[in-house]
Image (tube, rainbow, N blue to C red; front, side, top):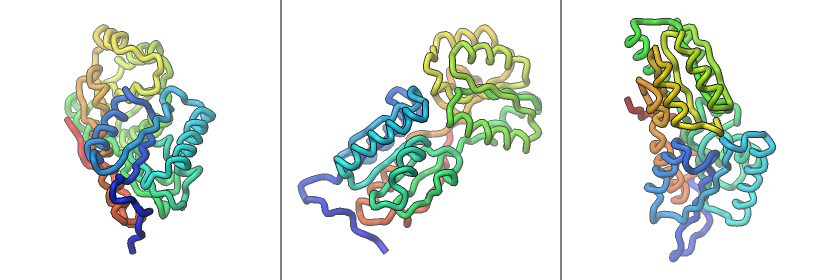
Length: 281
C-alpha cells in the first residue's frame, strides 16, 4: 500500500536534499552527483550538503557534520532525502532517522548495510560492490597465475571495508595478500616502492590522504614500477596498468529515480535495496 507524500503546491517543485559524505572534487562523489543531477533536473528543487569526511575524519567531526545536516533537514523539510556513502548512513540516517517519517534513499554504501540495520521502513538504496573477483582473475591471467599481491590504500573507513573484501576473495583464489593503509603521500610512495617485490599491486583509493599529490605519486610510479598494478577506481587509473572499475553515475541515477518514485507516492520499504551492476574495463 502506498502512502502519499506531503502535499505539494501545483506551482512548486518537490524538495530533494542530497547529503554527500565527502566533498566536491572527490572523483567518486562528483560522479554520483552528476548522475543524480542529470536525472532530477527540472523534477525537484535540489539542495546539497557535503559532510567533507574524507578530510575531517575524526568521529567528532563526522558527528558534527551529521548534526549540521540534521539541522538543515529540520529547517528545510525536504520531501525526500538522498545520501551518498557510508558516513552519511552511519552518522545521519542511523543516529537520527531510523524508522522515522522522513524518506531516505542511500547510495554508495560499501558492501553491506547490516551494520546500519537497513532496511528501515523509511529507507532504501543501492549498495556499492567493487568488481574484485573479475579484476583479480584478470590480474592472475596477466601475471601467469602469480600468487603474492599487495593492497595499498588510504587509512579510511571505506578502504578498511574494501580491504576486508579483497582479503576474503584473495584467500578464495589462493592469493597471499599483504597490505598497507596509509595517511600521507610519503607513506604511500614508500609502500608502493616496497610493493614491487610482490607479483602485483592493488591500488585502493587515494581519497582520505589529505596531502595527496598526483605529480609526486606519478613520479614514484614511473621510477619504481616493476610489476602489474590494478585498481577498481577510475580516478586511480593514471597510476595503474589494469582497471576494472565501478561506475559512480549508476548510483546517482538509481538514487534519483528512486527518490522520484517516493515523491510519486511509493514507500521506501517497497523499493528493494539493490547492488550496482555496471563496471568499466
